[in-house]
Image 1 (cartoon, helix red, strand yellow):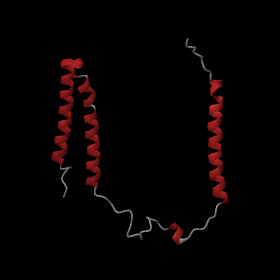
Image 2: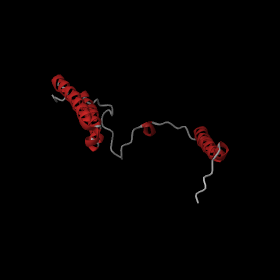
Image 3: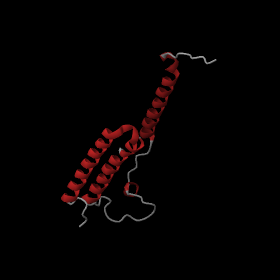
Image 4: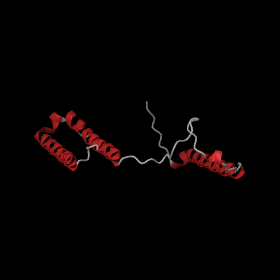
Length: 125
């Protein structure tokens, strides 16, 4: 026999109290270590450290915008393709209307892809 017991908000008080105490301990430790810790700033301490390799040049070297554009377009089209999986699984149950809707979706996808090609977004120079 399965016995179902209803819970009330007071049953969750120990859990809430645990989270509050944990948060208070974290905040207190951060404040105390910041207050008591040493505050020695030197050139060596503030220098970047990359596994013992000497720093060469600026770390803020700009990337080509084409890199980011291709990455965003990949994610965009990849996510759109993910929407095709549920359609493929339910292909028979969706019938003709589902097929027409997917053709419309693919047509819009191809229009967007054609626009990207015409704009030259994927050309590396």
